[in-house]
Image (cartoon, rainbow, N blue to C red; front, side, top):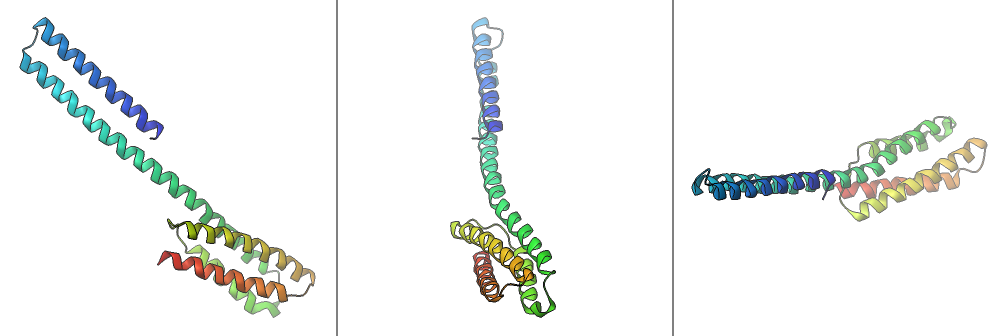
Length: 170
């Protein structure tokens, strides 16, 4: 249960205890009739039940928000990493136009993905982050003049991984 839910629950229990004490006081002092004491206690009991329901809903929403934020962190990292990759590839020669287009498509695909409640999707997202880092390092090597064959191979692997992750949304 979230801390707000616990605080609300404590407040509701406090109100219930006050109501029970007030009811007992009214009965003992004959200040009110038995019917009035029962009515006050009933109203406070209903407030207690309403507080329990609100506490449960608040706790469930807090858990859901926490889980969504954790899923959203990976998605945010994917989007920013793909944007950096797009910026980096712009420094490559024009002879790599096809590879630039693939990286642009990857950035578009990753820009449009949404969090999915699936362990395999999270694993795929982590795998894509690793592959983006690898491709980014290989781009540095290609810009420096090394053989582009490994870059092209890893870029194809990255593109396939992005396509596979996209399938989890369907």
